[in-house]
Image 1 (cartoon, rainbow, N blue to C red):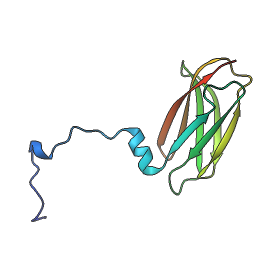
Image 2 (cartoon, helix red, strand yellow):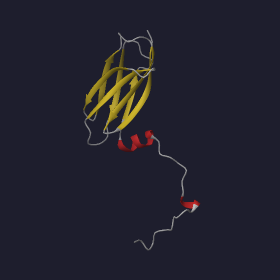
Image 3 (cartoon, one colour):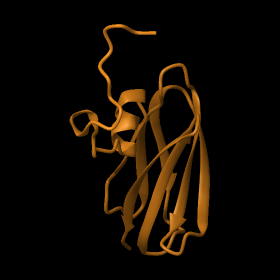
Length: 112
């Protein structure tokens, strides 16, 4: 029981229509990834940061049809992973990092 808590029944003054999006959640927990250079031709460097107390994750790479092209396992809370793309055709791809149920994605363009 709380004798100083406001009554929030259905009062419009206590409702919010704002949603927390995944990017905001990832910032709070520390999950981040970026790909450089982008667009890329020969290799891509993924710079990543994992949430606190996490040191394992995967980076999956998909084509625009959603087919998995490659999966990279990473270890360490922060670092860089290089991906050789000389055998990958030109096009648009999506990279996704996943750690402890959290994900963050980005778009990668490969040009030859």
